[in-house]
Image (tube, rainbow, N blue to C red; front, side, top):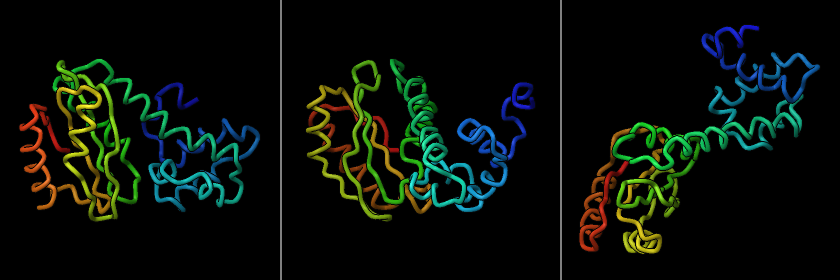
Length: 195
């Protein structure tokens, strides 16, 4: 078929969902279901970010189909994580950014996430260290440093999302970066970046 010839090139979001749903519902016309999902959740990302219970509220989508759809985001995240395994984050910054973007995508509240790195700049651990409301989050530098020392990290990358969609750092983001830079330097930890 078309997918075998061109991959997903030129496919609409609903057509991609249609292909996926066919795996869970092989003898059903999945086009109306795919279009209903896109309409309800606003696009492919919205469908993959939606909780399974919400997806099942679309008529015709049962546990099997919603279960299959709920696998896609974690599978993509695992794929992107595997692509940075063993690599220096400094040599592959885009791969790291893609992985972080996937990990935090769709969260309705602010999440502060840390990637801990070894002396060769490879990721050795990762942790959510704070969760907040849609516009603020509380990060305690002491806790961050304790986590870094606990996993014997040589440094770290701080990452957080802006659920509002604002991509520019806020004054609070800048202040946090400055504060953590000072604390990390005091204990000889490398603070590589704040994304």
